[in-house]
Amino acid sequence: VQLQASGGGMVQPGGSLRLSCAASGPFGFRFDYYHIGWFRQAPGKEREGIACITNIGGNTVYVDSVKGRFAISRDNTRNTAYLEMNSLEPEDTAVYLCAADPHMRCSDYALRSRRFASWGQGTHVTVSP
Image (cartoon, rainbow, N blue to C red; front, side, top):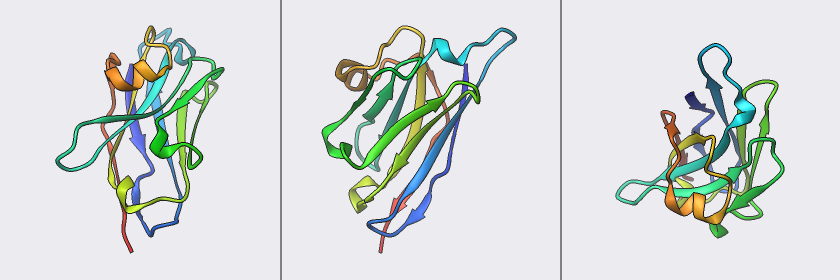
């Protein structure tokens, strides 16, 4: 599966952004077979799993630092997952990446392990006054 993240940009603290993760694949590709994770990597820091959603959207998990501010969702008819980010803080500045895996069900372990099979190119998010 090929993934493309988009929607990043520069925003002031307290602002909002909505990231998209568009998926595609060979003939017969089924987006609803894949669990999706959003990750971020700030300069000089390790990649961090921040949110995931199961293949049909029945379960979501968030890392504590984004709970209540970020929301992950998906539209399987559009082969796209989303990350709605509100109340952004300078500490949210990072490259944001989406990942997909048919077997890595959404869980705290999935976010910590980062062992998703397919990764997209990242989109930059900068939160600055």
